[in-house]
Length: 144
Image 1: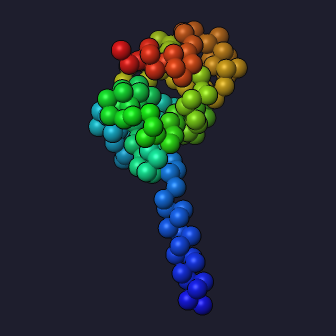
Image 2 (image 1 turned 180 degrees about the vertical axis):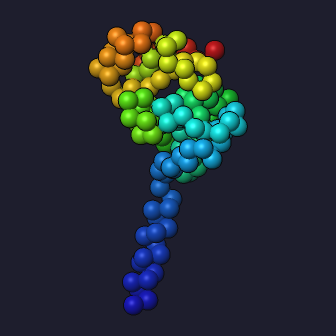
Image 3 (image 1 turned 30 degrees about the vertical axis):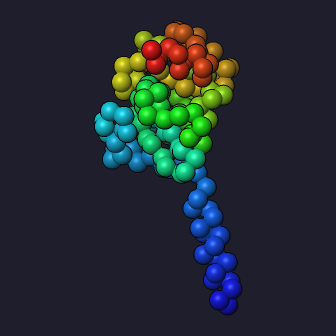
């Protein structure tokens, strides 16, 4: 019985060390970059370090600026962004596609939204107009 308890504690410890996204509590969590309360489920984002620390943001542009000022690429396990078409669902930021459109306001004014794939981003462009970006392109566009 003691071995079973020890094994359970050991497994819990191993799982606790794995980096993973944390839930964003909309209306109560604050943006790590600008300190605004995170309320917009279509524009939130998150960085998770390899040590498992999660940093939550109210807008993708806050995450990008925070990264450029505070992190090294090799520290990051995950970059996550809200999928505009599924509010509250965080997706991998690297393969995502981005739209900057004056017709979609984001919390910090960059008018930046993320989409799970290129087709979804193209469809949004037909509806809202604007300019499409890849991950690397949006990083260069936002962080100057």
